[in-house]
Image (cartoon, rainbow, N blue to C red; front, side, top):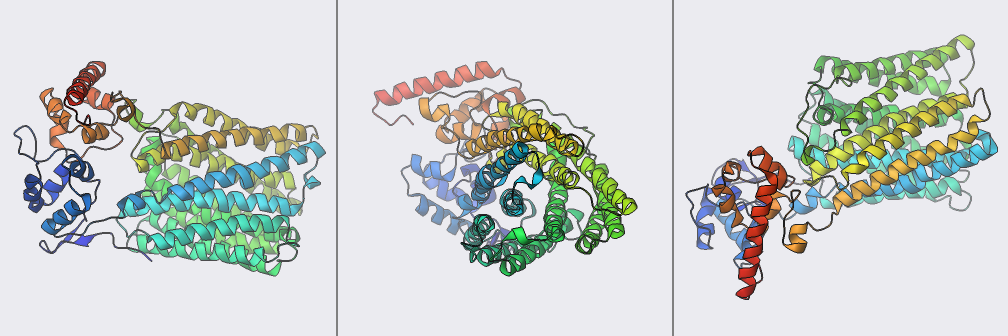
Length: 589
């Protein structure tokens, strides 16, 4: 199910990375000295000003010298004693279909459908205005279709990259994506019309079960040697709880295939929510967050011992919550809520969630400064939701009565949108550019997305609670869904445009800008490297490859140069270069 992460060099006797077409000539020459003779034979010359080889990808080198790329890679691989990784580009884009599917589902079947339901509730002035099956369809699409898709997509790309584990083979990636789509889309339409498509219930449930098992096996292969780390156990626990969640979903969809989720009891719906939110999602966020949030939020190094308490308290709380909610044991529910709340508090303290200690110099590569504010806002909603949960369960014990629907809805919304969605929106706008080795497409959207999601969450939770006392609150409640949907739409546009950006002006006009990636500039015009070295850009002579997200403006500032002056000099050189090449009848490169 998983593919080899590295190949073994027959000459070295140790594991060595395979060759990739995107590796630079200098990187290959440095990592595999035996390749230098091959590169010299095809035109790469020695230089006194820098290490051997230009910062030019092998594919560009082959094109510039009129070589067959596959033949060049084969010769270099033979000289290095390693294999050629021809799936590197596919592996680096493995997250894209999952994240794009998550965005499409939330804008339609998830948050989109939820906004319509909320509009109907607001117009009628009562929660009973929409069928329970429609509410379950919305919740399932949002949890499976948005949050699970997002977590899985990030995991498939991030874990092999960060821990060096074997990536999932392409066949199983396709199987996982197809199974998730079948489970989410099939389950949605089964929920709306079980009497017409009862077969969709067992089919979609089985698909989710397959997806969960494949994902769990992937996590095990990635984390088997890392389980002494708390973050690894949290992520693996998320995969285990996801498999339990999928199994329960399959049983229910098989058993109620002719009647649909409208026949689920309140305790069954509560069980599904707890498996999804507390079992799978919070474990995943706690685990991945320990690895990602300090760098994104600029917070201090996490307290590992405190977060260790998070793992045990949280998962013991989940184990207690499941039988407590199913059997309606108020006292046990209160104890489980207290443990889950203590785990959340320990996590926020351990992650130093409201303390920012590292402030980086503003530059395009680190993203908008407002991105760091998403994290404390999300933590605020996590603590708010858990406080409401504990207070509600204590009230249920003392008053010997169930909590009203609006109160439970406010807790769920504070968790799913206030905490989970806000965190996804903030983290993804920083993490996706890192995974893509590029810049966020529209950084100016960071602020309106933040304002919309924050305002929508506040309006939704407050109006939902207010419906307990004032009927006019129903009128205001639908507007919260419109604000949240607008935030998700802008977020989706930003992420999709980051995946597929327009051509850089360098490729369209032959002129660079301050946002032009240095790697692109040197790949297209490797002769500029010697010019930069002559201007005092020592960085260009030291490195083996240039990060693809490093811009020309940032490089100039880091070397103590005036960016506008350097840009003008580069564009002047490019203009003269093109003029000379056109005059000689060449292609301009």
